[in-house]
Image (cartoon, rainbow, N blue to C red; front, side, top):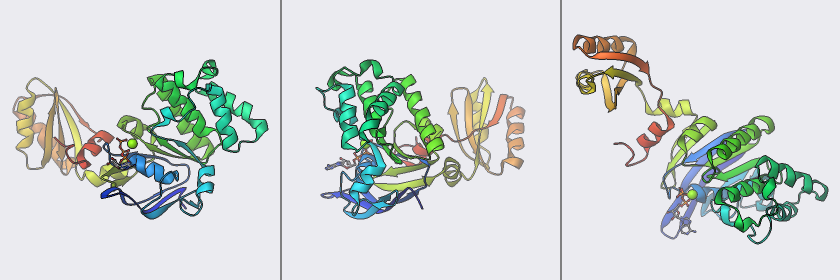
Length: 313
Ligand SMILES: Nc1ncnc2c1ncn2[C@@H]1O[C@H](COP(=O)(O)OP(=O)(O)OP(=O)(O)O)[C@@H](O)[C@H]1O
Ligand SMILES: [Mg+2]
């Protein structure tokens, strides 16, 4: 059974359908990435899963608890980093006191609070800022504090809405490592909303791309690749006239698409075992100086641009 089961989940705001009949199953220990353009419904989904909003139709289960029937149990099992996490602390209280306050609220045993707060602040490199008022921290440090807060009660599921958006590269790397560690060592399930495609590609075991509240694609990176690309892609690096190389590529019926990128062309080739040699020969016969001919794996950005309307050039 999945750690997160989303079952025909729907949320309307008046006429607007923000989440539209979403069904997804995310196994325990998975790092899951939810992608989609601004307004696609990612944060609304997170709010529904964290019981901050009630579904219009459908439901979801987290760690076996239904968001509608058992919201308290869901909250006990989940740690949430909301989209507006920068503004959810008590600004006039210290960093330390904020965490102690929330630890009590989340039911962390009294004798464990001090140690837990200290460990998290040290990990996020906020210990030196423990006496600073939360409202006076930088945006990135407030996001770090919010991450500490999401982890306070050792949740088995983490719902993170753009967890590294305000972090500097080193802090972002630490958070990525932390997330990978939580999933592999503690089998925690991590649900991440993000616009950072390389980060999602590197970290996530499963990815869904949504638009207008609807799931357009869901699966592992390789599955998304094979769903979208029936042909294999190659990069041909050319010294000299790239346009001549592209003209030759376009004139072959087995080349299904081609695009120029500075000093190379990227082509999709049908039946490459037979046809790569033909293409290479045609180019060499025409005097094109081919420096390299290599397989090109589609990136998550390629897939994203292909499925999102207006993404393809
Ligand atoms: N409380 C609300 N009342 C009315 N409409 C809302 C409310 N919350 C969200 N919406 C609308 O629902 C849609 C989905 O918004 P949501 O915040 O879930 O998008 P998102 O994918 O998180 O976008 P972003 O990438 O910009 O964070 C948008 O059209 C938004 O305007
Ligand atoms: Mg959002």
